[in-house]
Every structure is written in structure tokens, then in C-alpha cells.
Image 1 (cartoon, rainbow, N blue to C red):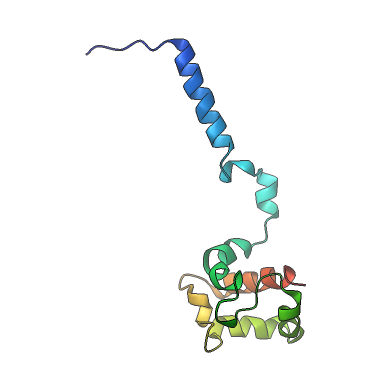
Image 2: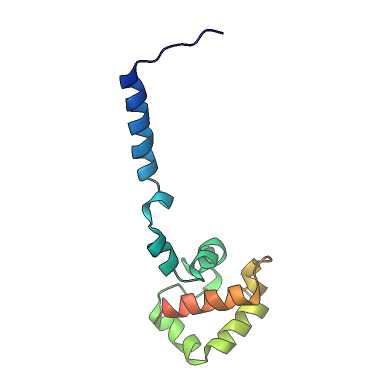
Length: 118
């Protein structure tokens, strides 16, 4: 087997290019302190709830819409959690269709959405 000798300057350019590309990724931009500071419900919201609550699909209150959330928040988080677990016809399915989520996951999501909508 014959090895091809690559000039050192080309290897350096490839390595620098890869490091720059990795630095541009979203996952590489957060520090452990920033990741730890994230709300525990944020990831679940981004995976399962965002599709309806970011745009208001089927009457879903938009994340951050203080006016839409105020009457819901006034009823208390226990009722919000119950609505999340059981669903709210016609648009909100039980557990927001997150079949792998636990009640604790849903509680964290409700808290995240309430905090972001006050």
C-alpha cells in the first residue's frame, strides 16, 4: 500500500476550516453554565409544543402572549397541568401527543410556558 504525503499547510487549512465550522454550530455555542441555566421544560416545549404554541394552531395560546395566557394563568398551574395531561378539545390532545413524556415533563413544560408568558 502506498501512502500519499499531503503537504503540512493543506492539513492545517483543513483543520482550521473544521474548527471554524464547528464553532458556527448552535450546539457548540453554549457553555455548560448556559446549558444548566436552561429551564427544564424548554427542551420538551421545543420538541413537542412549539409546533402549535408558536403559531397559535387550533386556538393554542401563543408562547409569550400575555393577553392570551392571563386567564389561563389566573386559573392556576394545577388546572393548566390537568388540561395538558388530559387535553382540551378540540385542538389540544392529551399530553400534547408526547407519548414518551411523564407528568413531571408536562409540569415542567407548563411552568416554562407560564414563565415565558407573564
